[in-house]
Image 1 (cartoon, helix red, strand yellow):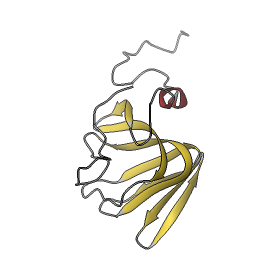
Image 2 (cartoon, rainbow, N blue to C red):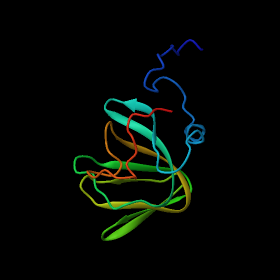
Image 3 (cartoon, rainbow, N blue to C red):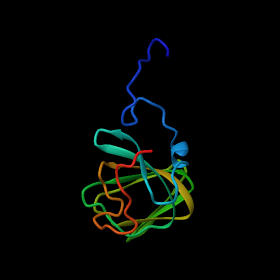
Length: 133
């Protein structure tokens, strides 16, 4: 530690370096996001996906997708956005969307704590919240 740095408690993923790709490597399966850090009421979640998800919307919040590896397409009812490694997009609250990936994609999601990945509906694709990795 140099003279200008101070020890910071490593709680909620704060004050420590987090290797996102290493964290994703600990996840078994696709569409199972895991929390790696929190900032205020927002969570940073890593996930790997492949194939098509389902159409859904988040009525009360925007959702941020940051692609780390691969190519993600987010379909909207009136078009789509294509994201490659190093790119991101914010889906506005209330906008119906469907993430899809022809091959495996590794990404970071940023959203408020407690957001259900399938929007207001719960089904076999609903991932549990608050699972830290």
